[in-house]
Length: 152
Picture (tube, rainbow, N blue to C red):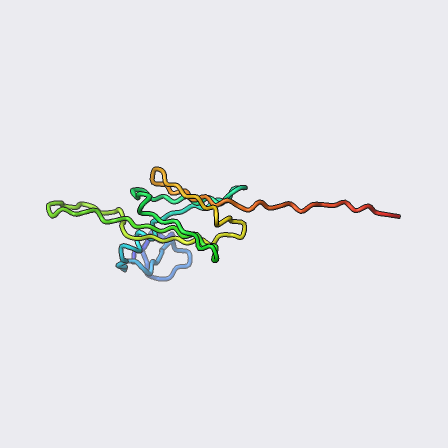
């Protein structure tokens, strides 16, 4: 457990001090071996914004080709699914790796779409490692207001 100096005299302590800045991390030192697929799964960052005319999803997928990405809509369930796979780089027996930080493996993200999404008109395009999925919205018809004359 790493301890930050307490505000009382700059000492380090294991004693509970409600005014201390000591932070206990229950996972410190615990190494969780996660499969590569999980690491890649967590890396698929996606923004979803709603404009007056459409729902727009943007996913940063650097290094992926459009052939490695799949965009699907489950019409009955109104679910948008974005998935793909980043392949491992081929290793040469003579290569010496100093650092490996880029993830590889599969990713999958699912979003339940609102009732106003036209799931039969989804468009997707990939440019400079950014996938943009646009789903037009149903036009919301404003109710007609009818004036009623007051008699009497």
